[in-house]
Length: 219
Image 1 (cartoon, one colour):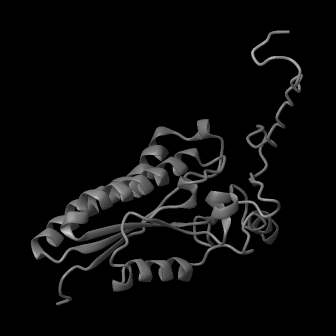
Image 2 (image 1 turned 135 degrees about the vertical axis):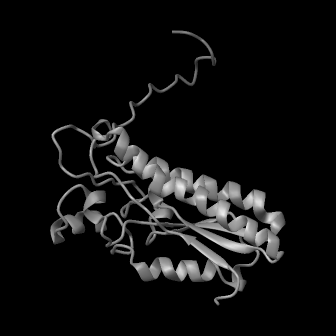
């Protein structure tokens, strides 16, 4: 009734609450990987034979995350699952390109979804949102329309020669490493008893070399 299968978007996702990594049990870890990673395995098994039989190929879009590129403390197991999605996307793209099957990824920064409190690890209040938004150069969270617009482009004929890319929809975090001032990286972590997020240590300055002493000479 709907014709052939042209585009598949793998968008299912889940996370553990933002917390120290040792607090996550095995059942939660498996749930994260079942939903975020294993689901793409099953969808690939279902779609690729159809696309190969049709001889016309298709497009698979996998929703990853900037967390799989620039991980934040407290979400280690989620970060790693999205890293797997990103790498899986690239590998699928290489292997399926001869079949005219394009595979691309979309990596959004945190958005106002039902998992927002899970990601932040604190109540979703204007004050807590503001702390996180302060790390995004364009000054807001991602929205569903942002991701939809990226998917529309990657799935369109205009992107027919694009495959294996991970398109970051992150409000400018990529060029400067998630910071807004001076190109420095700033990570916001929810308050917790353990020192899970600390300011980076300053590098110890090395003693200057005596220009009159031959190189390699010991003091």
